[in-house]
Length: 403
Ligand code: FES
Ligand SMILES: [Fe+2]
Image (cartoon, rainbow, N blue to C red; front, side, top):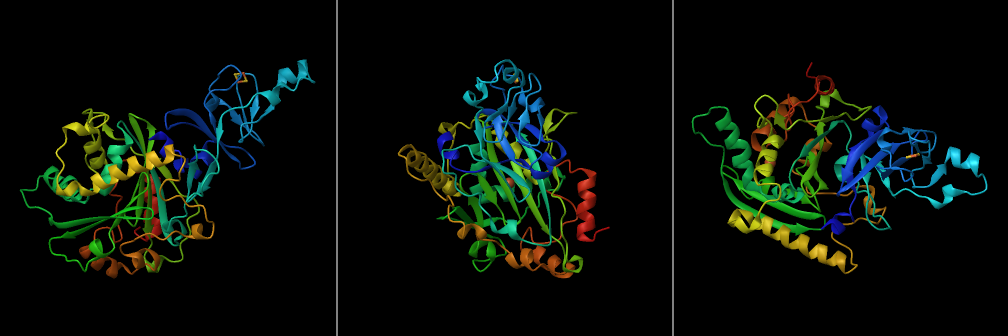
């Protein structure tokens, strides 16, 4: 499975994060690495340990070109070359020892405020320019969480429409002490494959097959992302037992706040456990997801499951991912890679309420659309993850005209 995932770019950090601190230790796909941005602006992702005597390069410092080890000063560039070995060059200037050592390195790119890594064989495909990355007049924020379970059970949730009704709507009501009244139930679900993943559709009580929740649907993006229209959630494998959740959230400013230009995309890390009770946090939408996923065990035991009609999408996706892994073993291309720059100028996806995000709306119109379709309205607070820093909340409220 790792070989399959290595064919895709993975978000591993935020652009603003490396502006704040130019080195960051990361663990991705079971490898301990350091991502950095040098003073020229090159992004690099290299082995955590210096090839000289294994010091931890996340404590190194960046220079004009490259990352310098704090132990004996060897300098590594973003392509893995050794540029300097201060004492060796003094002792044996002719030996050019530095030309004979390299550090493991992977390509990195910045896009949409995220820092992306490609850990597979060349040639790397393009970092997808998903349509929302091109939208204007939005307030974007990036949120990380580390979830101690396998990435794939998290991703199975990306094609599970019914959980929304229970894990989010009804459980929130129960947690809030509501006495049994329930949210609209699912009457029908549908799943189908498309070029970049799967689409899931639903008809809720009070709606019909004419509503966008059915006609457009939402996306389970290949191979490890949920895309709901206004936000992305990547499930990036740290290793088999841990997953980095990377959320990218777009909130359209109301028409009366246009034009809005965001100077810097903020990032923050959301806690998942309540330190007082030592229990998982349940208050926000994605925290509720996390509780379900870690509750399945570190790696969910699929032999103990009893799958039903609501799990048809999960079954389709499991089948496809095994086929894709097989394809990669045979040296073939897996699903959904983008290599054509023309196509990658803006990759369109099914988006419920596209006009809401692209053209925006007045406050009144957005209230009306909220009643019909969740997610299409001006939000006062951030509902997805707990722990939003006050400065991000304040910046959001300024952008939205809520102050
Ligand atoms: S361990 Fe890095 S320079 Fe010696
Ligand atoms: Fe969910």
